[in-house]
Figure 1 (spheres, helix red, strand yellow):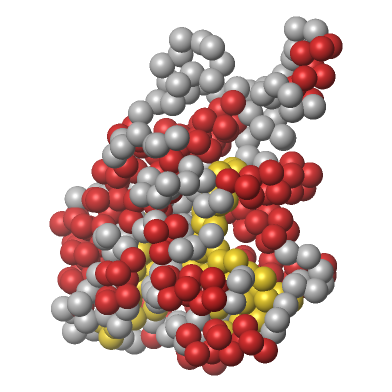
Figure 2 (figure 1 turned 90 degrees about the vertical axis):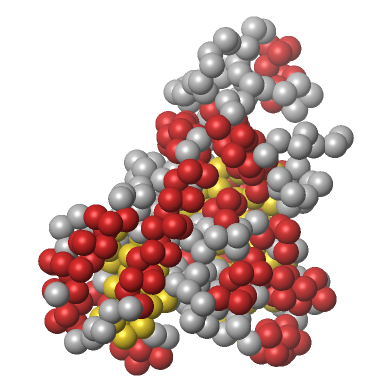
Length: 398
Ligand SMILES: Cc1ncc(COP(=O)(O)O)c(C=O)c1O
């Protein structure tokens, strides 16, 4: 069936049709652990899958299903497939559920060094216990990718992030997808930093997209959830079964909060991105700023590759202040408007000092080799008035 040609912003805002036969205009929260049936025959039909319906909220829930449908629509807006989305209780549970759905003992994942720390840990500390190995390489090096795939015939999945945290390195998504196809392995990307509004990896040949919807998709910092979106609907059953049995399901309230946030995704992201560009350009002009990592800057090493995959450059940036730890501390403490917090993607501007927070357990040598110096500060740029943000940043830099 041909998909309607509704535009991205419209899908974000439009309420899905009521799923419960009610006249509610706005999606209701189905705060129920289980569902009931008129009679035993009805119950048997739903349990055996002969009739559609809900059983138990760990398996599925109308509020969550409605949000899953919207996320899948947004992600697949340019392709023919309808895709399949399964929501989970967090970004981490999306990543672990997807891995456990696709991989078995003896298989390997090919990935990059600079992943979100929790993802590196789940691969190294949890999946390894079940016989799934992880091979870390520089995914910017396509020769190295092919070499690894030739050497390790057990690689089943290439998993990556682009842009990566906290130095905003961007990868050639299309190139990686092409290699994955050539070697008949699956590919998955964590698209949390971009959202489907800025970057739609299915257009570049990627098989799976995962999200921490906790970040930009929700945008307000009041819900923890995740999502796995598969381009091929046939994976729905496999991923759903893993989610249901591991109990990594989302809850209806967090899904509902995400649904609320999605309505303003496009206006938020436009403002996030324009503020980030202004701040990146401002920082680049400052004498005590050694480096600005933002793919939107023409001077940035990743500007070209980012331009091929993203339609705007996002709202995450990092910069290195001259004077190392002392000056970084000074910046974090002097700013008034920006909050110091470990998350990202909220409407307000958030600061993180990677060396003393997200990357504190990584050896200094490895950190520094990857550009994570003592003076590096990450900014998740919000949607405040940009002049106010610049004034605050000036305060920090003094
Ligand atoms: C890129 C990325 N992926 C995944 C996660 C994990 O998401 P959650 O905290 O929702 O489990 C995070 C968390 O910060 C993240 O930044």
